[in-house]
Length: 135
Image (cartoon, rainbow, N blue to C red):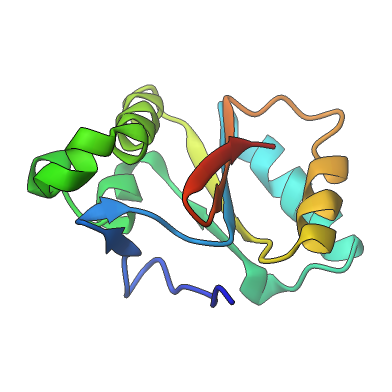
């Protein structure tokens, strides 16, 4: 079972050096206010403050565990994780705000997906075992 991550202290680098926060939805928003609105809605719908971490664009590289260059050759060969990291980095360069949401099971993932209706994330990636899916 996935566990909560403290993105400020323990970057979730665990797939051959690639960012892989198992059980998390990683959402990027153009406007911080939109991420804050979603966070408030999620709190009203059964999520807890500890389930969510908001990360500014300037802190994303640290939260993802450093530069993509440190990633092991196996992760680079598989490709999905590093491509997703690179997508996140491009959004961060454009000033996006990221909201990491712990949704470790089907029920919480469904609540997260339902809450996203009416929002316009720049990306919404859910890290599952062996796959990264869109929400």
